[in-house]
Length: 252
Image 1 (tube, helix red, strand yellow):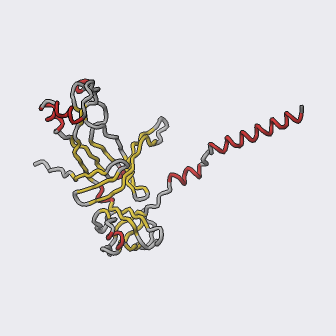
Image 2 (cartoon, rainbow, N blue to C red):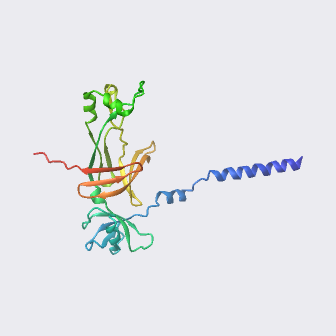
Image 3 (cartoon, rainbow, N blue to C red):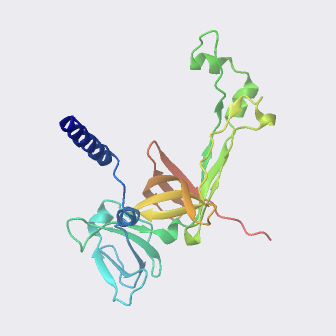
């Protein structure tokens, strides 16, 4: 009897040990490491930047001399996002093979601004009892609905100082007054913060909880494929999106 009781206790301990391994609990140190695992080097562009070198002061500034990295290969591979000017804020990814070489440079100063793209509506999804194809349904549409499908809306993002962001677009489903409309525009995800993390643009929706601590409710990540004075191209998980810079005309 005692032997069976002892074996049962051993078996229970083994099962508990295995189940505890399946759901590891992160320590505070491990959580801190996972949140700060950013390999991006941040700095301010200094005098001496050209097509082969980037010279910068590390930020936050620690009193050290300017650092210099080779960027010739990055230039050839079109991995210099933006035009570098003295005093611009930079986000740099060093080469994993050679710490004196930069594989990617993003002029974050040029990311700031209003970026826009046009979005066209689609037809409401309704059941087609006659089994018509999409082309047949489009052909049967009256001209008034076809005209609605050709009316775009301006969507976009405003990338601001202090890592603030504003998204322009539709954030909710059509309200009651629009429910009878045969077309609908896509719903835009709302974000209010941005950052560069490991050389990628991360957009975040953050809100304060009941204790006043900021919590991330949603995020989206994109690779910067092109950054020029009036053009921005971002590669998301499912699409490549091109933006144009919107310049506000001063009122007279």
